[in-house]
Length: 419
Image 1 (cartoon, rainbow, N blue to C red):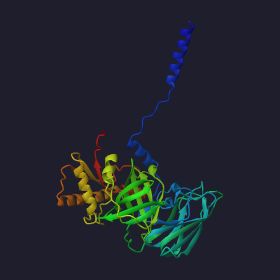
Image 2: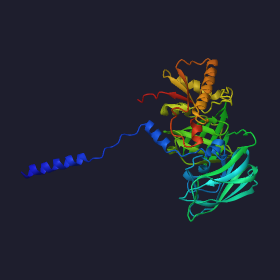
Image 3: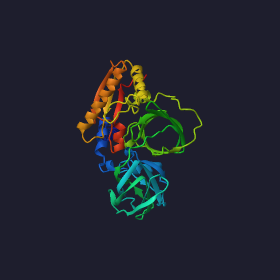
Image 4: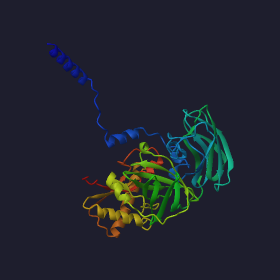
């Protein structure tokens, strides 16, 4: 009888516990993740007018310090109004020197901070050569969110801006979310060259340029292989390192001596951002880099698509065949090598005034690319050409640099079945 009672009690408890077990939710689909990230996006409309934005070509020429590379000086130019540079602990007096894409006329200067770790006093200086700086203004920031600007009267021409934090509102650490300069460029953006040897975050790197494409490596403990190109403002790369892959954006100072950048894992998604990147020139001790891995094909096989940053288009959205020669060769090789799988070439543009204009840009670019591939008599029987505009882009975009990374031409393939 006792055994029967114990058994009944166990069954009853089992039923009760079973009824109260939490339901494990299904893993969100990529579309659900993308939608959630889009809904989290801040309003970056003001940042799109900031001359000190990496997407405009602004670069960190020097900085004195940060609490970590995840909260580095790159955060002040990344165009995301919620990301932040943070000072080292109990060391609030820091400076950040930013090169503009080209010589510009500054009409307003300022910054934004947070109420959590608010900076108080910021001093601004300007330079035309990055060596000799002149005082511009000293600003006392209010302890509040949002951009805070002061007018510059009369406007001042500059190629570099240095912002120095002096103190904060009773905090051992202060932050700056953005350093902001409004005005206009007064000269064309000078050409940039990334070829040569670099020290990036103290690790060696070597990059070469050929036929409009830049490729090379970055030895961040394990060698990272790069393949990309320059869009007239910023260098865009895809990268492969062991089983990892992702994207990098580098901006470069006008003297071609300093680069700074952002790294993403897989997509240019705001939740996939890595540490800030800072580089300076070093002496070369080896020959020009040679690919030990097929960067574009490997990226595509892992992710189903790959951006072709080595393709270049002029202001009328016509393909520049000479500047795109290397990338066209790579495109043709991949189309051939993935046979019999179909290939889609997709043109995306996310930076225009509206969806209609972005679609028009995409259509012009994909038509021009198709015409050039036909002129070269490539076998396009398995290739579909798509003008997507800003429709069905891959992940959330919270800033102009993220729009930049998702704009251009991509090659899509079906991922091969794993054996």
